[in-house]
Length: 113
Image (cartoon, one colour):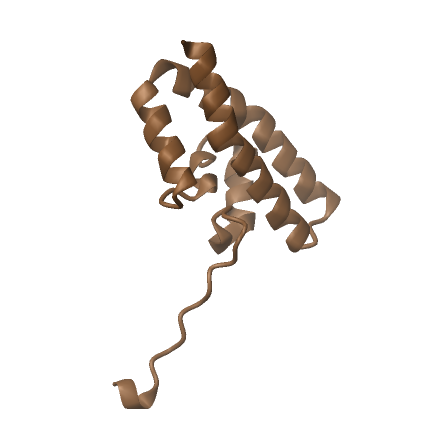
């Protein structure tokens, strides 16, 4: 059963996470050093996330659903997993690892006040 959960978790959470990080780094024109930080982060975080998913099926299911439906930014899963992950999350900033930039809200116009 845990192998099946691991497979689903890799498919539904880890693959989109890796894709979001890669896309954000390419979009930002990241330097080789930053890309290495991203790889080091994923190398440290993925085994931890899979182990957590194997030990807590409810967490795995809710996390997969949250990532799939956009309620959980994938980079939230990386916070605290390693120093490289914390650095990567701060470098990605407001993008949240979703593959899309978060539009900044415009200031209210004078007529709105």
